[in-house]
Length: 286
Image (tube, rainbow, N blue to C red; front, top):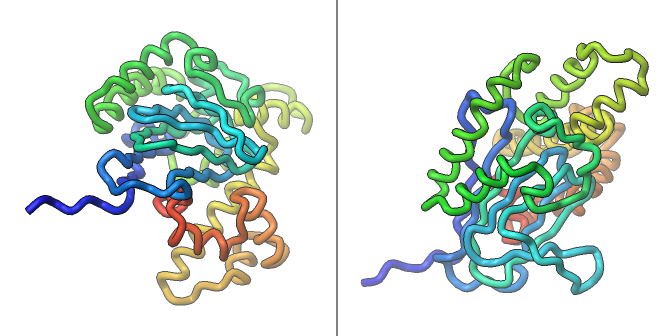
């Protein structure tokens, strides 16, 4: 008897090794090569606004970036760099695919490359154009790797010696975005440049791409969503309570910020994560 075919793609969130926890946030792997045919809606990939940078690999199949005009798409190269995103983004896979993504803390990428992250907010480009030939060579090796485990090993063999050499000012801890944002504020203030508010803000934008207030807003939203998940497991979930603990003015304030970052209200987002395959990243992230 033949084995049954999975109805939905395989999707995984992979943690980096501990020595890279303050450099790489996570890896995302997704493949629909061995599942039942997907509907057009299921072939969409919806991502929230994010302070993180990314390198994406289209290992098999194709991807298109859906732009804000109805029906318009932009082909995605096999190896793509993305800067921080200030608004939700959507991509589409015309057919079966195998994709892989590395998520990097922007301040870590700035240390590794000297890249002015503020120049890459809401931008995508081929890896070589954004990061140069060394990173492009690593990306090509990862693209040709036999499986995702080999991809992770290749990426980390490239990153680890460079990160260990660059991390003198870093405390080495990873964690959720909120932890990184707190550390960034301390590191920026201690960097020894001009102490005025404008100088500090320019430094934050060069290292992280976006103003500190935007980073704090995104970290607060992520923490609130994770807090709601934990409270739900304990049987005491309440958006009003989560909003109060997260520092929002009220529940409506939480809903507005969540919609700006994800495109949906908190309740709509939770429903979509459970019922709509195109929101798979929200499901595995929590």
